[in-house]
Length: 487
Image (cartoon, rainbow, N blue to C red):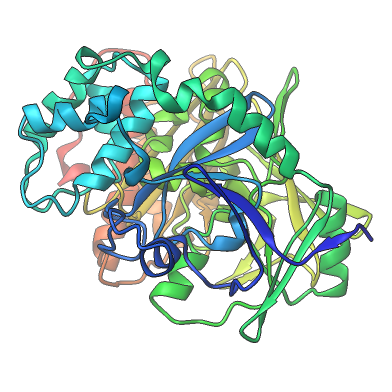
């Protein structure tokens, strides 16, 4: 067992803090507003949707010191050990004038009531540091996680395009001080396990993955928190006790690419996985950029999305379609499970007490494979799926030789459409084959009605996604659209 420290240590703006009296469910937003009186960070939704609470969190990784926008309302304090937290109060331009992002917002009239403005400024700041001359699409992506209640998006977009006219990102104070801050964060890495007990609760921060495995053998009932995009809502919306907690957002962030597969550490966030997805699985990028907003993608992890077993998680259907496998670990023992077999029933997965997902291996598609994933939701951006369909078909010599089709939102777990697959394999890849396969959907699914969608709607959408997939991957120009199917 490693040495133990009973406090978390991090930097808040330019101040080093060491805190021992921290409850496991204490949010960064409440800490900032109630204890530090930094009230530029606002509470809007308290569930990571509106972006009014956006701050930046910097952490050391393999590339150096990286800052990301996050939702303070669902970011739990225990996850900040070894980090640098930056709030709106710390922004300033040279000589104490307004920061370039702030000045652009003023000059372009980007602030109306002003409630959402600090969060928007912080999101644009994170974007600008990474991309000083953004295109309109880059700006819209950066602002997916920020809602303006006054509908002032046009001037905000103009402000975002104008930021670099007020200053250079390379000379920004945060960029200039990054070497010094990186050395300070290195000094915080003392190789000790964090074990904090406060207010009747307890949380731990493991030193490494081996330490995590040891903790879970001893405490298999512990709540694992990586990005807290789900657990944060357990705290803020359901007032659910989560102690003891083990914070793992700093672990299992490795990526390795082989000749035929990609291995993703379970702790890899959507945001950090994006470059790998864009290069090796570009067909999934449109879906990837609709998983929450930027703040959620910076916090949420692929392993967490799988581990919680939600039937409407965004990553399981495409990963099932690709034939992904999980590496499960308990102590020093490991076993491999196909992702499609991991989900047993609603709320139940093939994971023993004390066992956790360590990595996900994703086979790369064959040259003859056609791959796509489609998300259908009430709101285009930052919304939960009503139906998500993922398709991987191999077409050789004009016929379907292999098919894996998986859906979310159609059953109690993410599930393959095996009857539909069987209706396609061995047949010519034509609209006639597709239309005949539509009759097999009731053999695979009996969807439920809820506030997101009715059962009839889900069934119609699921069928139509297969038709859409055909017309986007039939290898020819557009044809007549089978109106009876799509109506």
